[in-house]
Structure formats: C-alpha cells, structure tokens
Image (cartoon, rainbow, N blue to C red; front, top):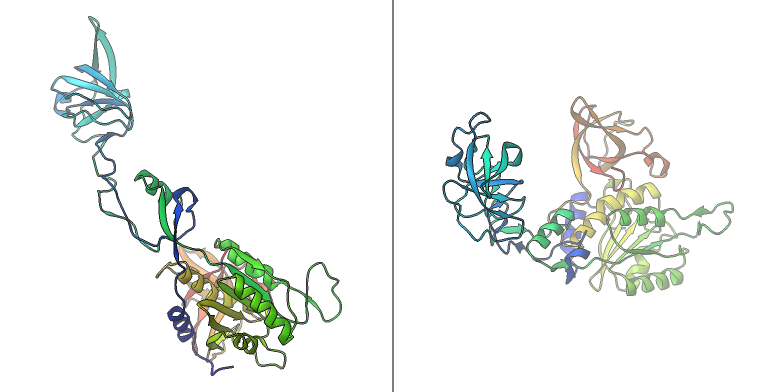
Length: 413
C-alpha cells in the first residue's frame, strides 16, 4: 500500500484522471436520466405568439372601462378563435373575439375577459357579449416570449435530463439530443470465503453481499451493470476474471483483497494486467484500503471487502467517478447537505476523515443527523434505515449541534 493520502487528494487525483464518456445522439423520448453533452438553445420564442391563458373573450381593455353587472359593456363578437387557428382579423374598438385557452390573441386585443364575467347574447341575428367586469391590459394573456426567448440558453451541458427537460426539448421541436454515453460497470467481489447464494453456507464461509449492495447503488442512479460470480483469492483466477471484466466494461469495481494481508492480491494482479495506479490507501474510516487505477482509459476501483466500508467507499469515490464519466461537470453525486450532528458515540480525535452513519431528521426547522451507536466497518446491519453519512474532518473536536457535511445515501431518501 502507498503512503496514505488525504481524502481531498484522492478525490482530486480521480477527478483529474477520469474523462467523460464519448457522446452520442439519442431520441428525446429515450433521453430520461442521460446527461447533455452540449448546450441547447431555444429555437424560437415561447410562446411564439401572444396566447390566451383561459377561455374567454379577447378585447381592448379600454372598452371595458367601468363595466359591472348593473352596467355591462356590450361588444360585438367578430369571430371565435380556437387553439391552433390564426385569428385572421383585427380587434377594433367595440369588438371582441371569443377565444379558447392557448389560442392566439387577435391583433389589437390586449386583455381577456373570463367567461364567468361575461354573457353572450344574440340581437337581430348578430353575436354580442355583455361584459360585467373591467379588465386591465395584459390580463390573462401570456405575451410572446414570456417563457423563453429565441436563442436564449435553455439547457446547459452537464444537465441530467428529467421529465421537464424532455418536455421543454420537445416544445422546441428537438427530436434528438447529444448526450454522454452511459458507462457499463462490472462488479467483482473477491475472497475465498465468499459463496454464491445458491450454495450451502458452511463454517467460515459468507454469502456475497457486496455485489448486491453495489448493484443497488448503481441501479438507484440508472447505471447498467453486471455482477459477476465471486472469485477466490487466487492470482490466476483473479487475473482471468479481471481480464474478462475489463474487456466488456468501462468501469470495473471490485471488493476485497485490497489491504496488506497475505491474500490481499487485488492491486498486484490488477497491475500485472497493465492497470496504472492512481492511489492505494486513503486516510479515511471506514474504507482506508481502497485502490484506484486506469486501464486503457477504463477506470478501476478496488473497494474494501467489509460491506460497510465498501458502502462508504462507493459514496465517496464510485458515485463521483460515475458523475464525471457521465459528463455531469460540477454536479455533486451523491448530494451533500449540511446538518447538525448529535449522539456521536465516540468523540475521540483521529488523524483521518471519518464517515459516520446516521438518520437525517428535521427538528425545530433545522436539519439534524442522529448518529447510530454502531459505527463498525464490519456492521452492514447498522446502516438499515440510515439516510446520511456525516463527514468528520481529521482531528475535529465536535460536540452535539456542530454543523457538518452529510452525504445523502443513495436510494434511502
């Protein structure tokens, strides 16, 4: 293992080493969750014409001056304008256009009288409307370009496309957009003690939980992945499994075999295959033994074998790497909030960064994280129901109520 480096240095090294995935064109209807590779601008004003915000009568506001139930103003109806139809006429003083929601406003009109404030009547075969309420210029009309102006910035590169983004793109006539490809991830749990769930659990053996744990994290952020069968602590077996995974994926994530014991072979096997080391060992707890490397432009992350430590490693390193590969720029993954800490079970200082599991709660209009009494790297059960990881800086002397950064655990909120 290298000289342990600080968490900030490890994160910086990874950020500098990892490049975004190539770009591709994708249909807007298939773009949910993808990350835009290019800025997108508005193709035209939205709305592209002044439009009615409700059903009523387009009028000249001055014509309604002093209108009331007792003294209605009578205007002649020139035409009815449904949505999608050109008014094809000019609203002159003393006239009105029956106008449906979303329809263009007849030129000359500057307000809409609601249906409930008017009554249509016929006199000598002609259509009129009695207006019972004075309206102001601009009332119930959305001006051209109110939502967005032509050529204005609509969506920036690095935006993770959601439903509103998809609707906005479609509104401006976009059928395809340029996005970053999504990395393919392979998960390989290592350890001769691990057995698959369909095998009997004999003394000294453990069922593989890390593959499911990491698969859940990846699923929560929409990343395709394949979980391979656990592999024993044998150099030949490890090399074969790693080679297969690196041929088929963009990111290889392993767990176990990354410390300095006799059977911690993962870093040496990876490097025998040509993986170039970024770091090995970070001053953090849990998850001190963690390795990162590059192989032909592909990323390798070897996480701790302890499930709780692997879970923390995944939030601290794996998720930011995925954000970088997907082109999210400065967007933080996972999300980090500030919360006040309480119930710290062990307040001793340490010369490393600690991540303490806890549950986020709102108390007195403030966000707090109630820390779990169990903080062992060997305890995955203590994460059940927990929603955050409080980051405690080296040598910090903290008391209940101290404001600390908290990683929101993926899939728990």
